[in-house]
Image 1 (cartoon, rainbow, N blue to C red):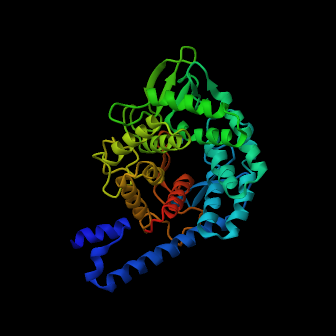
Image 2: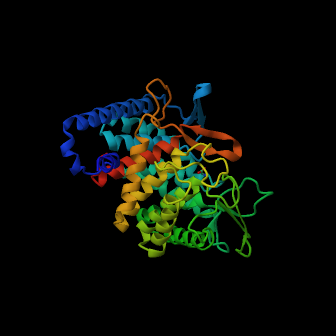
Image 3: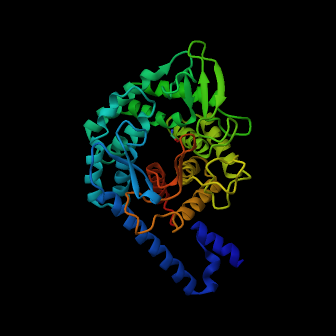
Length: 399
Ligand code: GLY
């Protein structure tokens, strides 16, 4: 019984059976919780204190070299740092975060015309989209719609999908990656803001094509599909960031769960909800998923357990499961998400006070194919962690 009670505490659920254990245990817990909140607050302040730089969005941090990796606005991750500041404003109510968020957001604006990438949603929706939710600024609204106009130029009618990447043109003809589902949020919102249905229609076409071709019978997803842009047929199913073509690249699974849950939000199409549920079930019950719910970066890696976890995948999945819970009422999704967030809210994952870099969580895993950011603080891990905290708050769940 004691063990079960503690599990409930760890999950952040009401712990009725703790009464007989007296108040000391509760005090210990609340002292520990206070310490974590203080540590988080300390980390949040590192973000707002970071010097504004139109050309250098902080992306990741290599502790061994004490090096902050900064990127230009064209990088797929540029929107997340402004997005973190907008979310911190929502979380704390402190205007200082909003002021900095709007400064950083302005530097992303030129991306609205960049048609060389599918990453428009990541860049523009995480920055201007977050800002618009708070400010309702018409300029932000126009940028979201202009960006959607640029993104749909990458749509191919034969494939009925938006092309993801332009690089490696000698290897792939028309690559579409599962991550691309995330960019549909910008399109769905653009229709809501403009009343022009074109963006919504293209988003649905893309989601349907991905639904048809990208998933395996067991519920997992491939990373990259290469299409013939003339016939629309699938040429190959491969990976770019996973350990092998048929492996379970964790962040890809998380994008899929998030992407189809979000697509359900805008369409109420049950096939999308069922897709999200099936992939969530697959991921959360995978034999190689660690007990604490923070996945290894690839769940099929032969070196498990001696490989890194991916906090970013954990945070994306935790945030998505909260939304999925709100549509399905399936408590298993809520409890799983709370378990992951509770794990991340510990000193194992939160960066220490001494780390002078604008990040919150350690141990995200970037890109094995480039040998880049393997087991580091990465900006998008923080973004989805903060989003998960806000969603928990909306659900009135305390941890
Ligand atoms: N393309 C985004 C990612 O690495 O997950």
